[in-house]
Structures are given as structure tokens and as C-alpha cells.
Image (cartoon, rainbow, N blue to C red; front, side, top):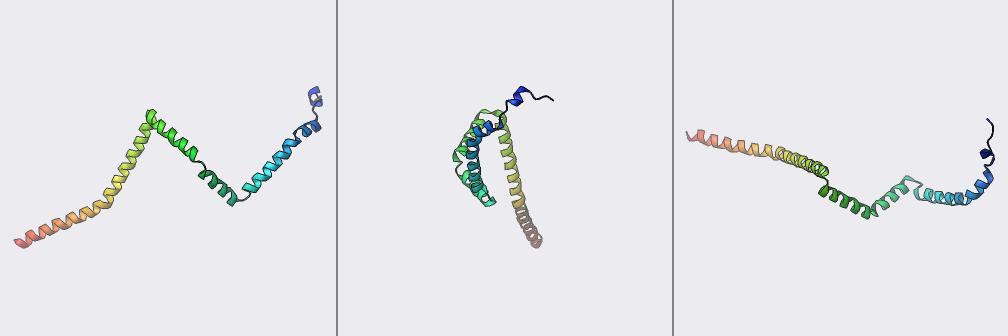
Length: 121
């Protein structure tokens, strides 16, 4: 393949000279990031610090969600459905927990009544 004029105009040294200042700055920024995020512990600390400072983002997301609940019928219906399912599950668990206790007490009372009736005759 013949070399075109465009490829001959490519001057590697001039490009390096033009971008070398940016590369030096980039190298310093990479070193700073490596120092900040060099270990797992440092990454975890940075993530924790970032999460603590993200209250504005959390407020934005909360406000957006509330606005969507007020205006978007499909999101409102889906959220209502999820809440209803959670409520039904909670009530079902409550009845399972206390149902056996109530049933035992009811059987004890009925057994006592039947015993009194049988002893009376």
C-alpha cells in the first residue's frame, strides 16, 4: 500500500510536545488517585466518606420518588401493590404466631367446660 500524503504529514514529535504538558498533569493526577485508592481499605474509606456526603443526592432521589408517586399512576399502583402484599404477609405471620396460642387457650377452655359438665352429671 502506498503511503498517502496525510500519513506523511503525521509528526509524532510535535504531537508528543503538544500533549506532554497534559500527560505530566495526568501522571500527577493518576499518582494522587493511586495514593487515595491504593488499597481496599482506602477504597472503602473513600466510599464511606462519599456516601456520608451524598445527602443532597438522597434528598433529590426522595423528592423525585415522591413526585412520581403523586403523578405517575403506574408507579403508584405498583407501590400500592407492594405495600399491600407486605401488609398481607405481616398479618399472615402474625396470625401464624398467635393463632396456635389462641387455639391452645380455646381448647383448654373448652376442655375445662366439658370436664365441669361431665363431673356435674
